[in-house]
Structure formats: structure tokens, C-alpha cells
Length: 363
Image (cartoon, rainbow, N blue to C red):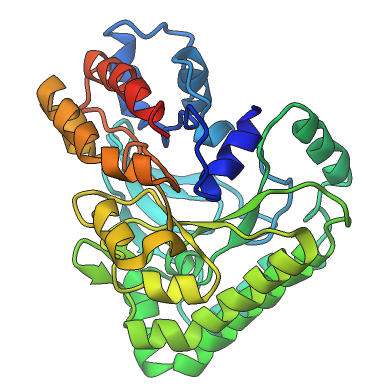
């Protein structure tokens, strides 16, 4: 079976003999550490590591070349050099201070959307669905080549809250939701229409297998928006997009990337047509609980507690054994529950990969 055939069988709760061997990438500092512990120096990117270690690589899966969000990007530039720190503007127009070498959380200074007039300018300059270059003119030919090579192919489903949070900051969007709900709804409606406008221009017959969404909107105790407002503002808009994906491309699987504790939002995502949870941060969300509550309505990718890889071999054994019932039930692919942090030694990670191969055979 090809990689694509095996993944689609997992999505249908069918046995495949060997589950796809994925992980969700690595911090830059992790790769730097591993260079000192045996990883060759020329293995530098997430994709390099996945290929070197023999993973099929979730990040290696090709995505249709479209731009459905912010486009064109802002100029990335250094605004001030403060010795150990830099003040920079990133491609989303966010200005922040960061350490030159550490991957610590930056100090955010200014967001591109802080007022309604900011939004209107941002919308007109960076969220115009007709801006040239949103769709690669060779999209169908590229997708057909990937299909011949046996790859599954994903398409970007977009984001409603996650992008706005990045462009506004958590505090600003939280205040806006409570004091200017109509404005937030206006922004989410524009993002929905933008997404549909771009998706509609993908040539008919272009092969694609599933959608991937990014929606970081939970912290360690639950969602950053009330479930009631989530249901009102977001779920119907998800459904408009997932309905279109099903009708136009036959897509029945939408993978949702959200960190934190997601229990309260999963029912709404399922109603909105988003049915695969990823990467399932084990410290806050247990994939076994998700399956217990939602049965085969929900697909799962992730859920291997990164803290076990930090702790060592015995903890790794216990963690993988804990997940065997999910693997045997189907509709689940075990991967580390976020990017592998630099606390994980190269030895522990290689041990985890070897032990995981035995688990993957159970699928």
C-alpha cells in the first residue's frame, strides 16, 4: 500500500498492518543539541531529521500551494538591536522583542490590528481574496505528481480565531469579543469568505485528500473563548467551509491543530465538520478520554506525552503501552504531542522511535 492508501485507511478505522510513522517536528534548539549527541551536522531542518530517521514525516506531506490567509506578507525586519535582544517585525506585522539565541517566548510590543481602522487597513492590504498569487498556476499538475508518487495531499482549511489572536494579541481579541462582538463576527465572516473564495478557484479535478486547520485557542485549563460564543461565532462558519470541501473535493476529514485543553470545544468542532484532533497535548488533553467521549466520530493524531521522552526509557515504555488500546481501536496515529523539546536526548528519542515501531504494527 502507498503512504496515501494507509493514511486513508486509518481515517476509515481500517487495519493497515503498519500505521504511518509520523512526528510533529522539533525545536531548533533540539536539533542543535542532537548534533552534539550523534545527529549529523548536515541534518538541520525538521524535514531533514524526519528523512534521516526514517519517518514518513507529517511535515513532509505535501499541501496544495495556495495562500488563504494573510497575503502579501509584511516585510520582516530588525527594528532595533539591543545587544542580547532584537526588536523585530515579523511577516504578520507583529512587533516584538526576542532573545538573539534562545527560543524563549518573545515580549510582544505592538500588533497590526488594535482598532477597527487597523482592521480595515489590514483587511484591504493583506486579506484581499483577489490579490495575485494566491493560487499556484501549476497547482493541479503538482498535485497529480504527488498523487502518482503515493503521497496523501492536504489543503489548508484556514483559521478563524487563531489568526485573529496572532494579529491582535490574546488580550485585544478577548476584550473585543466581550465589548465589540459584531466587529469580531465581521472579521470571522471575512476570513470565511476569503477561504471559500480561494478554495473555489482550485481547478476541479485537482487531487486532494484532507484539510488541515490551525486554531490555537486553548490554554492549560480550557478555551480562550467561551464555548457558547464559539458555537455562535465559529461553528456555523466551519460548517460552511467543510460542507464546500466535501461537495467539491469529496473531503471528509479535517485535521484541527489546537494546543491546550480542548475537551469543551471538540463537540463544536465535530458539529462543524472538523473531526480529527491534533497534536493532543497530553499534559492537558488525554486522547483516551476523547475516544471514550466521542467514539469513532473523532480521529486522533498525537497524544504521546513529551515528558515521557524527557524522563527516559521506562517512562517511554509506559507511555506507549498506555496508548495501545487506541492504536488497536483504530482512527489514531501516535506522535509526540507537540514539537520535540531540547530536554529530550537524541538517545531517548531514538529509543522512542524503535519502541513505537512495535506499536505501529498493531494498527
